[in-house]
Amino acid sequence: MQPIGIFGGTFDPIHYGHLRTAFELWQALRLSEVRFLPAGNPPHRQLTHASAELRVAMVKAAIAGQPGFVLDDREVRRRGVSYSFDTLTELRAEFPQRSLCLLLGMDAFLGLPDWHRWRELLDLAHIVVAHRPGWKAPTMGPLGELMVDHGTGSIRDLHEKLAGRIYIRAVTQLEISSTDLRQVITSGQDPRYLVPEDVRRIILETGCYARERRDGT
Ligand code: ATP
Image 1 (spheres, rainbow, N blue to C red):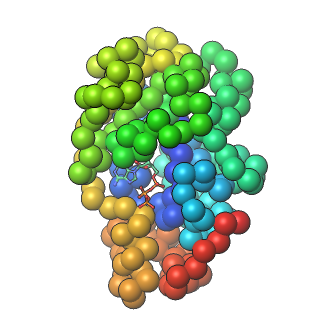
Image 2: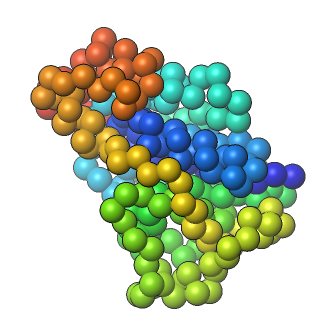
């Protein structure tokens, strides 16, 4: 059975940096699917900008028609704080015999030691790290040590074991971030070609980033 990819984020908004990364990992790792999990009320940040419902709608629009790309809105439905540990525990119970791969950009991986019960995440899933412009893999500290103990260069490991390995993968470097995108939109510029057209339409029609707005729902 092929591994399941789990790609969480605030997706505020989702952009081509997310989509291309997910697509390349889906292909390279021969994942059965990539589950996009928009965060409800993320513990690592303040409030999101667009509402959870709109962020879900944008993810849905962005992945429509792509085989293997699936929306999983459990964190949004759960409301309140959602920890990756809890989500992975749920997914592990739902798929006891499947390899699970948590997909992270390098910036997210470097922040891992701040996550709730972070060391236990590797009991539940593999961690696959995609390079992201401007971020380097850790060689020292707790993550450097984690890499020594759990690092692998073999995709086969991700298929043969259910969890416990860390695999770093180079992907096409697209220097797009949701923060920069929101800046582009608030300043009245057009986000065309940074996000899928259907996502752009939602952004323009709802005006969700048109002005400074905080919405934790
Ligand atoms: P923000 O600018 O608000 O921090 P973001 O663009 O980093 O947002 P998130 O929703 O926080 O988007 O990211 C979800 C996941 O996607 C994280 O693991 C992040 O590292 C990864 N990611 C985001 N943008 C890129 C990109 N351009 N290339 C590769 N990975 C990315």
